[in-house]
Length: 359
Image 1: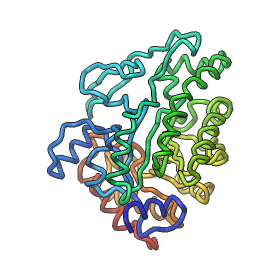
Image 2: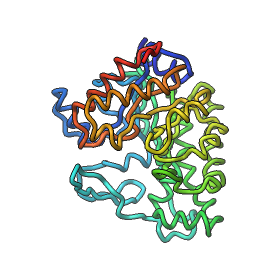
Image 3: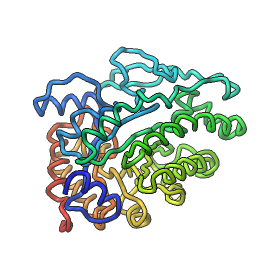
């Protein structure tokens, strides 16, 4: 099969020739792998519209073009910078690498959502990267448009997490008006991306912590679910074949059924330290493709290559049968992950991920 055929077969809950794969990298890990492959690059490609060279070099089965608020991460090498939303960012050094963190929330004191203007996502130049990806790679690879940090995350990036949580509990009229305003960017971008012919629209809002939700299921159902439903309905009206993926780290088991109800097709990353992928597969695998499932918290950074291979085998054995699995680390590969473990992930995925699964 081509990469594209393999990807599309799996997300339609059929068994391809082998489990489709992908991985995300932090910029440092990305550069480390490129140098291992003999490619000298200091460009920051993570979360960019072009997707970078590494997914093709590593044999991923689909490519991702990033657009919108999520591109604020790692946007520039400057120690501090401001993105187009007015959010202030700063690079921080940690013992294991460098990361960007938000240091300024421009709407912290706003009282009326009509007081601010959002970036214009009707501009055609915003879609140059995804058009190029479709033209250059669309026949060989699945193409996904990532518009993550879609609503809840964008809300607190702009306003601050504590203020938004208070809004949800004590300032509901403001919160509804605020979310309706923020919905505007993704309505415009989503319509455009579906019309361009991407295979998957990938939205995301982290609403899960390690072992509980950041917001209550009731708050999710009041503020986010109906707005997601509105988006999903419109995108599938424009193209009934488009698939929709949703990302949230952490524990979100109480709302998975809600997401399925409104038409979600692919759940990412099914973080195994927070939710058992085998259980999610048993309960929702006839309707959801699971994308991720490989532990990034312990096994990849601190295990041996043999540990990584066993982790990959476990996920393929328990989640892979019948299709509906995209195997990937359950978030960005960090700088501390040894190259040997990264290579072990790819090697094990290809060795044990052949259908019919016999491990």
